[in-house]
Amino acid sequence: MSDSRVDQRFDELVSQVHDWVESAVALDEGHFPSELLSDLRDLIEELKAFLEDDDSAKYTRNDVLEIFITPEMGEVMHRFPKVRRLLESAWGSQLTELIEEESMGFDTGDDDDED
Image 1 (cartoon, rainbow, N blue to C red):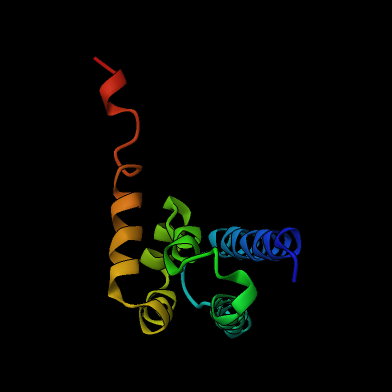
Image 2 (image 1 turned 30 degrees about the vertical axis):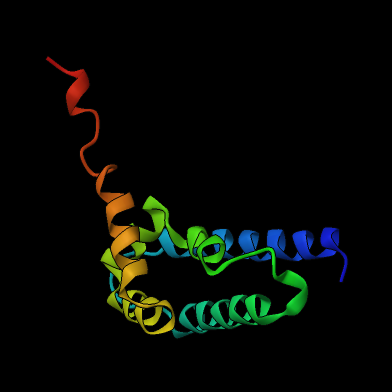
């Protein structure tokens, strides 16, 4: 696979993860649909396969994990423990800790701007 095709595939996977996160954020708190959890599981498997592909050697595990480290994913993990457990079992607890750190800075709001 050429570099441009590898980059295009990575961009597609990034987009799919972002779409998944947007769908999960839009859910009401409570029951997390098994279909959405299955979609995340499939995405994780696709990303792992992408990393194992010799053509995608320029991308590292950290490049892939960065996709998940967003305040929105932190919100999803906080609201839906099943998502946290899936991410931990797939990538390790370091990822969930990084996601929590990323989302912590966004919980404070605009308190510093007010007198």
